[in-house]
Amino acid sequence: MKALPIGIQNFGEIQTGNYLYIDKTAQISRLINEGKYYFLSRPRRFGKSLLLSTLESVFLGKKELFKGLYIEDKWDWDTTYTVVHISFSSIGYKELGLEKALDQMLNQIAKNFQITYTVGNVSSKFKELIQTLAQKGKVVLLIDEYDKPLIDYLDKESLHHAKAHQKVLKNFYSVIKDSDQYLKFLFITGVSKFSKVSIFSDLNHLRDITFTRTYAAICGYTQTELEHYFAPYESETMNVQKIDRVTLYKKIKTWYNGYSWDAHTRLYNPFSILSFFADKEFRNYWFLTAPPTFLVNLLKERFIYDFNEVETSHFAIESYDLDHLDTLPLLLQTGYLTVKSQDEHLVVLTYPNSEVKSSMLGYLLAGFRHSFPSTSTPIVHKVHLAFKRNDMEGVMEQINLVFSTIPNLIFQAKTEGYYQSLIHLTFTYLGIYLQSEVNTSRGRLDTVVYTDSHIYVLEFKLDKPVEEALEQIDAKAYTDAFKAQHPDKKIVKVGISFDSSKKEVGDWKAVDIVS
Image (cartoon, rainbow, N blue to C red; front, side, top):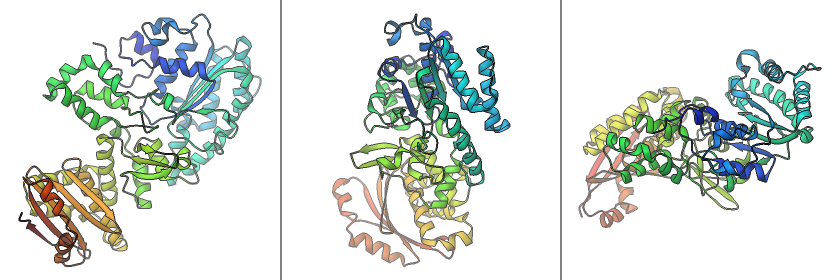
């Protein structure tokens, strides 16, 4: 059984170290044969760096690394190319400053190739490097995480650094446009897709394969790949989890599957899958490697919290600009939302899976509560336990805790908005544990919670008598459908009146529905 390459992004190390490699060389072979200039955006830890490392090994002619892989007999291994592989995650721009870091990187590359520059500035050195190397044959240029000097500084306090870096990068990348005659192949990857005007204004010949179905699975794992390549790890995992194979893959799919950029191909995040089969435990692996503090602050500031099947346009998700950070493309490109469906007019985005949804809801709930993420999950879990015990007193106690940490001045300034957002987030998060539906319409919130024995139909009111909530449930006949669909369960209507002056449940009443 091969070792699992958690955190290993070097293709040569994976192949020589007897690590598991999911063969992506069929897509790589097609990529090389179909074009010359490419751009791909994918979230962090999705296999972008490994893809570039594999491309590098192909162009360097390292045939021995591809034994048994698709491309082994489909490439001329005797023809090799000079490869310049740049990764912005390792050039030290935070310590040195971006321009100095780029200069240092170019000097090191020149040293490796035994080149001496005749010019002094960064852009001129980059141009001279490509032209000098091309004297022995066309150059392959691979650029990984092109946008890291930007996305590391998107918060308000640091945005000026991102804008300064934007100018440096624009000048740096402009060299590529005039280097066409010297290049065999160019591939640029990143998390984000900044507008071409701001970064790639001169690179209008790049083919963007981010949303292309042909290359949708060039990074990440498909269901077929998961069940084929990870079959040797099934038995031990089933023993630890004490479940059968069908249940195992169903649960893995719920937790980690669902990423899509073409609304057709559904993918697993490699880091989560590798970590899961290593630990054999269902946990939030990918999300917790870099919690989205900046994003949560941005969403809280803009008062955005509902991401269940949100609609946007193709144009909106194509790119974003530093001066106008649009929430939805930012969430899509960073991996917190994914494409659920699309047509020629609209794109529907939603959470990809339970790992991302539960983690994001926990952070959002904490952000809106002005609390810590570590305190939100226990509260919602206790709401879940209270419902399972049919303990409505316990449910109300935990709902009050949700509101308890909000500063009075903030809550009083946004009474109804805060009330709705926190109820929505709490019960949407509860749906991870119990089936809970939260439907918002014109400021009205209805919640239905299903347990093994009961169905609770809840209606919330703000600063109004609890009887109004119960009357609305009756007037709208909310419970009628449940009587017919679930004759074996007890149906309970629950009216809850929230007291905004005290930030707590002022009154509540639960009434059993008689069949």
